[in-house]
Length: 368
Image 1 (cartoon, rainbow, N blue to C red):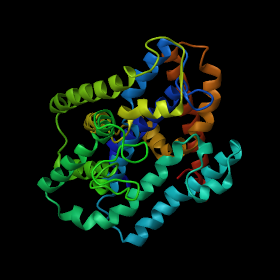
Image 2: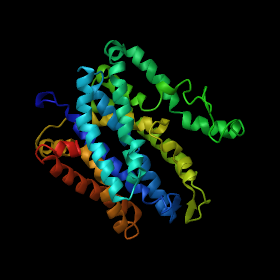
Image 3: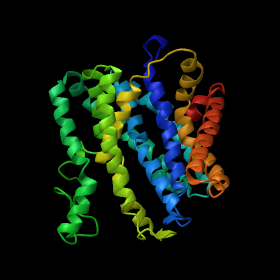
Image 4: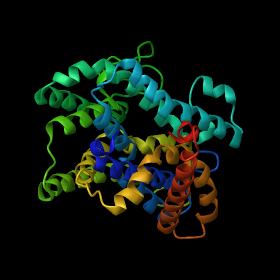
């Protein structure tokens, strides 16, 4: 993007969202046991990990909205659009998959079918984003001419689907055991059909629409109006995200707590990126970050370089976080340790990413 067309607030958004990712993964150090199951050493760890993590679950959706705001609807020929994504997204992803497999003794063959779990799981984001890129050219003709009423209508449908994690839980509680398997099925889903009624208008598709909606139909608001909308949305969303996790931690208040990985998944119901509470906090954060249009020295020397390096920062950060967590967890109070792990990981990964990107010819192939 040329200098005079750069959307300044998106650089602030990327930096904030990237740091939020580091905080999420720093919190994970306090509730994942060595076997991958749930483990809390103390009530303090449970309290701080829950409420800090709940505040930053908007991180990944913010990245999706940024991509949508910038790229959707697609204005370039489809082939050119995909070629640019290949260079900037796919190639660095493949390189870092290989590095993680090497570093953590993963199985190279895994990469043929999915992101390698040796990464700690964080690279799931890239295939999801690539899926949205595949969708963008297909939907762009509609997006170019869609009215505000149309987009708002689809967003209402999508917002209903953010309740599905909770509806599945209610279905299991009040409708008895599911007819098939373990997971309750909704609206046409069954073992021989995973594509239910709302399959194609749910998930991260909604954040793609939100980016379009904000760019086309929502002008930048005053600080007073921004906060009048954002603060209530964030409070309600944060309460949903945090309380539905914290008050379901097993053990009845007796620590340490240990349980299976399945319990971790169950607890994270309200932390799912496409769940209702998270969606509300995403909108709140976006409205506030949209006001960050300061383009002076700090932006030019700090924010913009960090934003440009953010994809590389994301790709590599688990390698740094693992080392820092081993040193800081247990030696400092939980909130201080979480802050230290996140800040240290962000700083080191960002600097390394910025250095790698300066390597002539190959730097952007490594870090995007």
